[in-house]
Figure 1: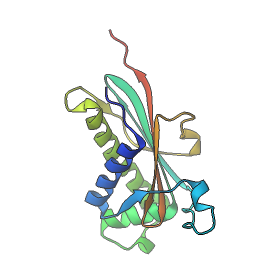
Figure 2: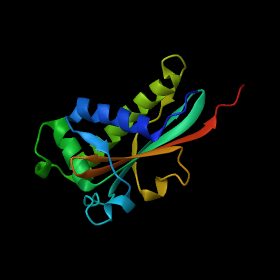
Figure 3: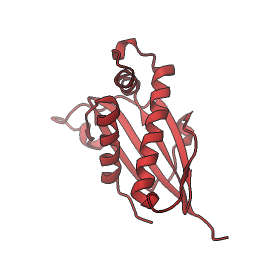
Figure 4: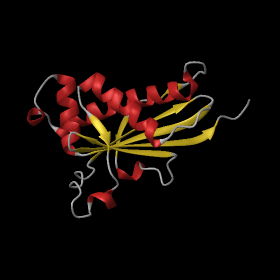
Length: 161
């Protein structure tokens, strides 16, 4: 299996956002950089979470962490509406779950899923307790001034039967 980096997560997520919701993303600076004078303002805090797992030659999970503004923009892009017209707690969370599904699918293709059998679980809304203590890779993105984090954890290699 291939190893993925934070840069690969940024690339996969950026492509998904551009293709599905017409949103532009770029890697965000670390929070310590944005707290320094002369640097950009920090991104809005995390408010919404979604999680999805996958199984196959290895097991893993993807947890998305987003600001309310991001989930509104995401849902608006998917639905063709204005962000102000989107409820972050309903349509926003549904959109975040769908993005988790897309990102997980792209991730397993990068891991060799085009040649290996993988299955993806159902995306679910969750809370901050779902954040992995030791993720394999984390990508923080600035999506038009809003926060999106992708936490990928490789859980275990599948055991041979």
